[in-house]
Length: 339
Length: 185
Image (cartoon, rainbow over the protein chains, first blue to last red):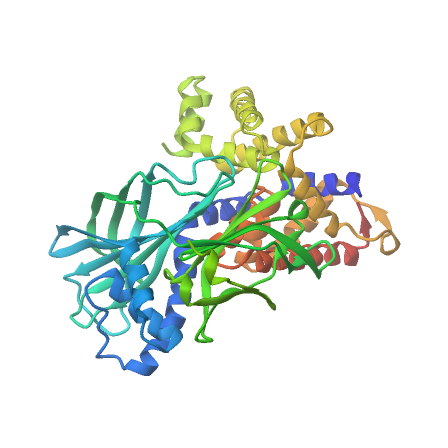
């Protein structure tokens, strides 16, 4: 260990130009916005796939979050959802139906789907002028949950807009996602979650021109009574990137749990030098593959174990799953253990 | 309250300066200290010491950018606490940062002279200037503010492994710059 040299470097970084510090601080302050933008880029790619098959004019996403997921299921797998798949999404989704109007623009919190470490909320915005190549965004979005799932010191939570689309009748549809990782036991409670969603100022993307000034605020509760399908998988050796050696090395993941909304596991992350390789995927019995929507890890109290939580793009019926793929490693999913 | 107004309160020796600083920058200071020390109580101690040191330093000092100035103070206090206690306490945040920064240290055979801290800062400033804004923000967030790699990955919408690789490339780039300058640390 070059202790003296690294400490000297650390101290020199302390006194870097204030402009660079200010820039990084504003980057961090815009964190939720950054997450939102990154996810929109992904949404754009998925939308492009969809439009190639469906054409611009005929897109109808339907009237609920269930039908929204149904469309994306078809885009990704090329198939209609099975009965079991439909039932899983139906079971985890609930209607909210809360609206507020400012200057003829009505925002409705339509419905939500709640998972183990995440939740989705579908918003509908009516009264906007639908023009080609014009997109809208809110100036600020805050989403507060009580009880807060990510309240302990080693938790990470993020939320943002995952998809934006125009429905066939000119309604703007927005899918929000909130996800978190906690170093505490991730068993979700059954008490309802109280949610406060505040949307401030409606802007036109690109020029950031304010279309409507005002605040749409919604207070609602989500029921968590429905059990989420889950199964334990065996400890498995997968490949991780060692940033110290700049090479891939094997690492054992433990406490592996697959649920219909995500994938949780733990591993010794060697004090930050080991990161699991990209691409955790769910392999369906049909042979189709569904990627994750994102994930993160938090350090457990022992200081050496990273607790990771990755989320699927929509709830998935585990009876339709044959394996989980991490890099090149396949972990079979036995049917008999699914609860 | 605007930074200039807060600084004005310090100059008037109005104790409201501390509560306004805490209201605007308390969370920010706590995050930096916690990123380094990973222990809430010790981070809180650093933040309180930061307020005290700020009260003692302004005036005569008059920071141009109060946020960056406070960040430096809390970072230094946290660093000193780490130096004092790290043999007894496990401060994982700082250990990870120093482990990673070791990648930037030039190999002894490639260097000619030991560099002073201030001169090293100037080289790092020039190197930061050469980066894209996004890379610069990420490097400063990680090695100045101590943000965890997986948090940065989440914000960027990429996997932790991708972010770790990106950070590794940045560290190698800094090492290469230092070696080209022909210095040792």
